Amino acid sequence: MQAIDQVTLNFDPGAMAALNAIIALVIFGVALDLRLTDFRDLLRTPRALVLGFAAQFLYLPAVTLALVWLLQPPASIALGLFLVAACPSGNMSNFLTHHARGNVALSVSLTGAATVLAMFATPFNFALWSSLYPPTATLVRETSVATGEMMVTMLFLLVLPIVTGMLVSAFLPILAARLRKPLRLASLVIFALFLVGALVANWQIFIAHVGTVAWLVFLHNALALAGGYVIAALGGMAEPERRAISIETGIQNSGLGLALVFAFFNGLGGMAIVAAWWGIWHLISGYTLASWFRSRPVARVAPV
Image (cartoon, rainbow, N blue to C red; front, side):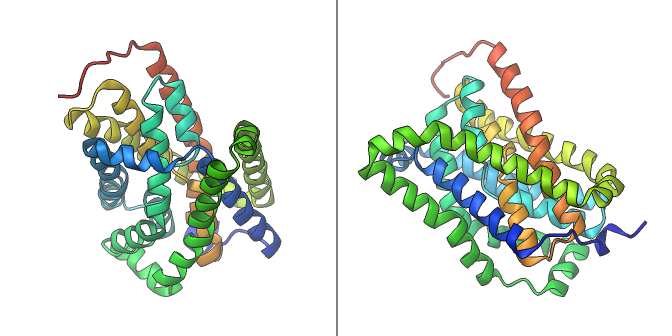
């Protein structure tokens, strides 16, 4: 069996363009729920903002570094974990927070703000944390990934769709109201079908290596969900905010990660399988956790 660090997945240019369009559509759908007031409200509650960003942009990459140092997976798998950890939260985090009886307003605002910041934060975090683990640092140097090029890609995949969505929401509110639910459902279904198609096209590679990846993704995702909750609790947040920050930390935009793998790493096997499996697993784990949260009473006490 070929080593996973030497495996590349089949992905033609047409499929790459389709994936980019799907990611932009997903982000556009997220932006239809955003208002400028959401960002102002976040600034009025700086503790929730700081804790949410600390969990997502500091804790998760740091715990990823600790995980790969401890377990020392193949370099391409470790690099995939770093990339997913550097991505912003995914659009399903808002639905799952609602299902969990968490603070939906906080979830939507954090998703939007994190998506905008990801243009800078994702390339920076990925370059920084992957450079601290020698096997991934070597792999990044060999592929000659330019942070500036990644930022330009993030501009087209994230920032432009979110600005467009907010403009539609502000100036065409009736259209935005009609698009919100069907677009959210359609984008999820389209992405799921695309992911299934990509897996089928590379089924033998996926089956050969998913066992190596699956348990690492389980552990990585569990640390993300648990860490977000603990950080919010230690920061004095009430239960609804703890649930929102937990889900924001554990539901990553792995579709964006997959797009970056094919754009900059030529479909490198370990990275692609990590991003694809994250895309499947975090929905299962997120819905399971949200359902458990939903079954528990919410004590709406003021933050400490």
